[in-house]
Length: 496
Image (cartoon, rainbow, N blue to C red; front, side, top):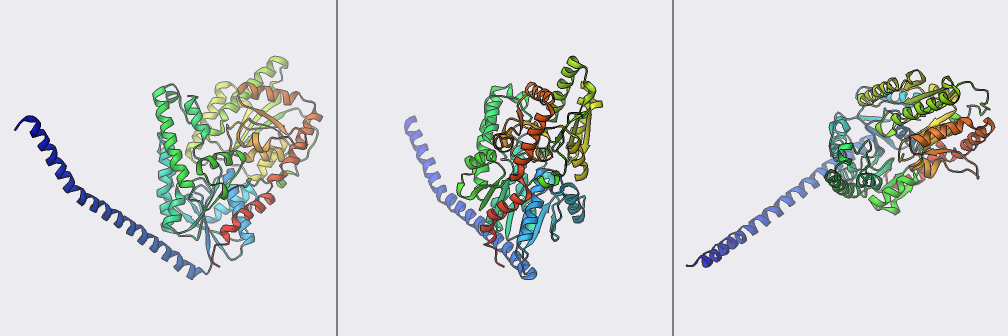
């Protein structure tokens, strides 16, 4: 037998062997899939049995909010408490649960914190389900592939939540979209979401494509063509998964026009998506008098926002330094200006970030003119607002900007980043009048601050008056009406 014939014979034998193995392999795959489906169905049946038993015991349906950081002091937490308050006022026969990872505090301490920070008191108590594995969604646990790591971690944290309590209606109020299919398909729940910020966006993709360094695109990536290309592929694949998970939601609420554009492009559910502006305690700031500040000897610049990297407090300090230098060079007026940074610290990482910012102030020689106010009470926040002249905001593509609205309601001249919600929804003309200023880099911020301080006090007063009148559309009352209208179809599905 020639070599060619031997090769043909071997190929025939291999083909015959593979064909003999094919049917058993197909059968095995079908069997494994069937077992997996049965396990999922059995788990779903068990979870629904638990829910039915709880319903029979309690006599009322339950709405659960997934908010692992509910004891933090940010705008997202204000949305949570206002949403629960609005639903409790409307639906007296429904119970409410909050999934939280705040293990170091009691339920009453969480509610007291909401009252102290946001001036919000719930009509009746809520049940808290304390989750032990919140570490799984901490960004510090995933120094690389953070988006994917946190998303996978949220699935395990959602699993813990589902095992602890099976609600009738599940609301993700903190942006963990990968928990939605878990509660919908395993828990058999109706699911909704309030999206503050898309986990990934086309803007993030453009930053990587254009190789621009940002807090989430370090220099070693932006300086490498290969790593940038690899990160673009990673972002595209993640965006596909994120869109698939988000599209499971029966109801989608977003907090701004900017967020709406990105969620529509990613989740592709326009018929289920609506804009519900977050609640801002506008009325609480209206008692701050609108007075002519021409005789003020010390002008204060106030910044309100959690100490997270995307808030870009470093830019605020550098801008402040530049303004001081320019004013000192022109008129020797360095002692007439101060910067007050007000914000909440969620964890040790945020507290470490504050220490770094303090160090930057020392390095730039402005430590005596920069004050840090951490986790302040609502009363202290109002006091600092009342003493300020300018409200400062520097986050690129801020999804909305509750701090911006609060500054405007307090009658401050706002200077916000020229992007995202502040540009599209908030710092916009009101009845033809100017409501504030926008900037996008260190020089433009410094120039805007100098321009604001150089304005006649009467001109500043007119801008402040326009700003205060324009933010009435972001009040708690407006949020309650829009949120309840959006939630009504889902709430109507609950069996009383």
